[in-house]
Structures are given as C-alpha cells and as structure tokens.
Image 1 (tube, helix red, strand yellow):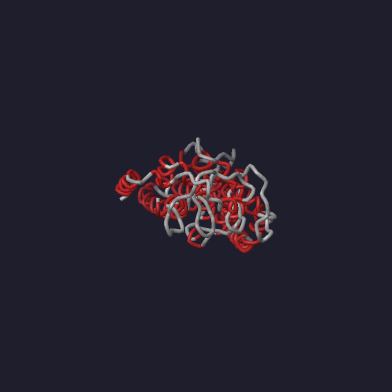
Image 2 (cartoon, one colour):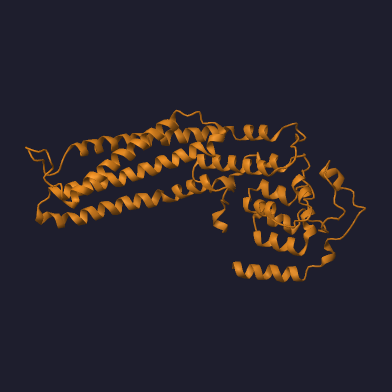
Length: 359
C-alpha cells in the first residue's frame, strides 16, 4: 500500500500544472501575516475554496515523502499558508509534533527563503516556539507509555525548537511568551510525572533493598561448608561455586547502586530541565542495575542450590532452573519496550516520532 501510494502521488504530481504557483506582486495579504518579516514576491497556491494546500496537509500528518516531492517540484510551496489561521508548513509541523518534518526543513539544503518560513507567525502572532510550548493533543500523548516520557518528550521538543530559532522571540497577541505558555500548559503533566516517578522509584527501591538483603545473606553462607582448620571453602575449585560467588557479589553491588540511585531520584527537586538529562538518565541507570541484580540473584540461587543437591537430583533440577529463567525472560521482555523507549528518548537529539501505527 505504501508503494502504491507513492506511485499515485508521483503520477498526480506529474500532471500538476506549474502555473499553480506564479508571481503575483499585487497580492498584499502577506504583509499582515508575517509582520516584520521579509515578504516574498510570489503569490500563494490557487486552492479555490480549500483551507489547506496539499503540502500543509502532508506536513500536519507527517507524510515525509509528499513534503519532499512537492518542495522538489514546487519550491515556492514553502510560502503556502492556511487560509484561516495563517499557519505555514513549519508551524503545522511544530503544532502537530511532526519532529521528522521539522528536522527535515531545518536541515534541508537550498530551501527557498528558509528565514521567512521559520520566522512566520499565525493569526495570533504565535511563532513556532509558541506552538511548541503548547501541550500536545491527546491523540499524540496516548502513544507515549508513561507521563514521565510524555514530559520528557515535551521538554526536549521545546528545547529543540528553541535552539533552532535564530531570531528574537516576541510575545504573541495575548502578550504571552513561549516560556509562559509552556509553564502554564504543562503544570498538570509535570505534577503527574513527578507522582509517577516518585511512586516508581519507591517501588523499585523496595525491590532493590530486598535483593540487597538476600544477596548479603547469600554471600555470608558458603555452600558445602568450609575447612575447620584453614577456613577455605571445600568446593572452592568447583565451577558452580565460582559462579555462586561472582553472582552473589554482582547482585549485592548492583542492588545497592540501584537503591542509592532511586533514593537520589526520590529526594531530587524535579525541575523541568531534569526531565531531559538528569532524571531520565538516573532512572535508566537505576532500572539497568535493578535488572542486573535480579538476574544475578537468580543465578546465585541456582548455582548454590546445584552444589547442595545430590548427584541424582542435579539433572532433575535443571528443568526447574530453565523454567525459572523463562519466567524471568518473560518479565524482562514484557518491560523491555518501555526500557527501549526510555533509552531512545534520553539519548536521541531529535524527539522520536510517536505515531508508530502509521510508520
């Protein structure tokens, strides 16, 4: 279906008339739309009674192929604006959280009048940064797993648009700055993110403390006993004993690291800027340490139990160990997508497109 759609689009663009975009110096409406920006001498798309041109619809829905092809054939399409709200392709991409479209326009070489496109304002004098400061719609946020990831995406998207602006940002018609819009519309999401983060950190801290307690008790007990004269473990040279010792140490160390990290998150100030760097990275490190400690604790138990069984029961216990490992693998795989989403959201420079069902 994707290939057929591209073929239909290319066929339609082949038959599109180039006089659709033509010079029209008598058209003076842009002077009210762009205010102090430079005005292009080109006219706008002759759309009849339509509110949006094809490139605006493509930008709003994140159709990269259509945006690329239209700009390639009709470079003047960069001037197209919505008939009522005056939003252009850049404002459409920012408002609808189409990060890949915005990044494409930002880094595209030989883009016609790039400065005009990025300086554009709508009918309420909102710049791209004003629109980035608004809270994303529900249809966008419902595809993000947790409120903390939603807040992280919003902050990172706002900062990405802010860093791309090379001009002074003025207030809109309501005399509001982008920062004021962002703080006002994201207050509830920020509070919800803090509650989720504190609740998750509290639960993970309890699990980490439990694993640390069991790991310490396991390290204090030596399977098979020790030599009464020298104090050396009797099974020192056994492979399973080496695995038991290393896994016990790893479980204790990782659980303590995880416990300290989650406690640090729990007592942190949770400022907005922390949702892009400190908090997500610490939370990711804490989850990684917790998963490693769980795996190490399971390995420690299996190896220690293997040493205490008689020779006839050792092979019978292997299926039990395998079943336990499968249960743990299922738990990890079930929560692995959240882990991957958190990793991508933390280390990606451009916020990832969230509309996964359309990819």
